[in-house]
Amino acid sequence: MSKHLLIAALLLPLAAFAELPQANPVPGGIAVITVGAEGVAVPLVKYQEERVLLTRHNGAWHAVVGLPLTLEPGEQQLSVAEQGVLRTLAFQVLPKQYAAQYLTLTNKRQVDPNAEDLKRIAREQQSINQAFATWSEQGPDDLRFDLPTSGRLSSTFGLRRYFNNQPRQPHSGLDIAAPTGTPITAPAAGVVIETGNYFFNGNTVFIDHGQGLISMYNHLSRISVKKGARVARGQRIGAVGKTGRVTGAHLHWTVSLNNARVDPMLFLSPAVQAGAPPSAPAVPPATFGMTPNGG
Image (cartoon, rainbow, N blue to C red; front, side):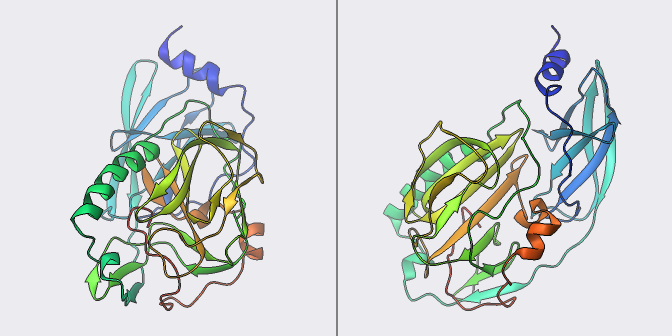
């Protein structure tokens, strides 16, 4: 069996998804691009050398592409391989200006880790990078997520962060402030590919939802699942806490697509978004976490 037919055999049993995620082709957003009519041969699509999630919708194959926060607006290209033919598809990335957030921290190690901290951070970054680079052929059961916990949206995706007036990585996830012990549940089905305790992120769980769609949950007070476990939508995976580098109890939730961190809100259905708790002001006080590896 050829490589493309093998991929087709793996993907064809899946039903067409009822909904695609919300397209928003900006840095940190998602581009949804039609790559061909649905057929026996499944195209192999890459963006910036990373495999791209494919789904069937309305009789066509669609590439669901994560766009890095560092991406410059303008023309981008996908490479599409189908039955031995390689072609490119161009698409446009639009500009977006994210708000700035200035935080004052009294613990200087939260801004400038010491030498031992840096050694630990470097070791842990390898594990984090490996988790986000995970690829499994089986596609996700669904491309719409539930919120993983209840609480106030205390810090939105993409904020340009300054700690003690020093620029740091932008916020690459969504923070939900809630009391310690509040249950955290899987927003969709998947496999736990890593758990651990990290300097910045505290107690952390990674879930592989399929085809490069990875979610991460930080600062947990406890972890309720083990590496390798298959979890169902709504299954408890842990509880909200304030482990790692934080100033208050909250969940930091990251969604990664083809190894690019994207806005988790784009995976929420309109109904879930409508029922979501209100967000904090654009520049909230420092009552939530600072998580460079997670956002």
